[in-house]
Image (tube, one colour):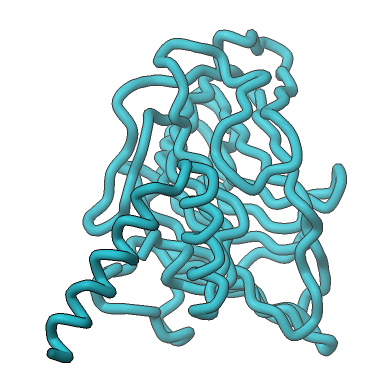
Length: 261
């Protein structure tokens, strides 16, 4: 009898969920994530038409505005475009296409509600290919900004013509020491852990973590900058001559939400 009642109850729950409109279903899904301790603050999978420009695109979730652009000296809107297919990574859920920025020092920007309250932890993840051009010193970078001020940067490092490029983490003007000896090409999954505290904010960068292994230990970070103090409210992606390819941007309060689990 108990088994029969349980089956009937499950059937009722399932029918009520299926009857929900998509908006209500998404709200309930978000509420369940909040109650489980994690919040996906913002997400961008670049689920836009291939070969379209990114300016004015307003997909994803959690952002406070549409994508805007800032063109470099040789930049065109067509240099900041959506290309197919999207980037992928083992065990990471993906949607849509990817963003390519090929114009010199051109950027795509998008805002979120300010983050950085003391006592909070924020995770930021993205798939990125930041190859750089061996003949130019232009950086390809992923930035977190406070207004117009750059606070956190993951880029392909400073290099002269013909020099190899490696990933670099810079927080509020302070570069990680030493920089991780990780080539900026091919693509990687980058995950930032930011612990905000009254005594100083700690930023750690994980590169290509094994998602199925669970939340990584701080000691496994490839680079870290400790003791800075900042908040952020904007994402900026910048491409030099070598180009930047980016996809699957997530900003969350837990590791699981940051990697789509």
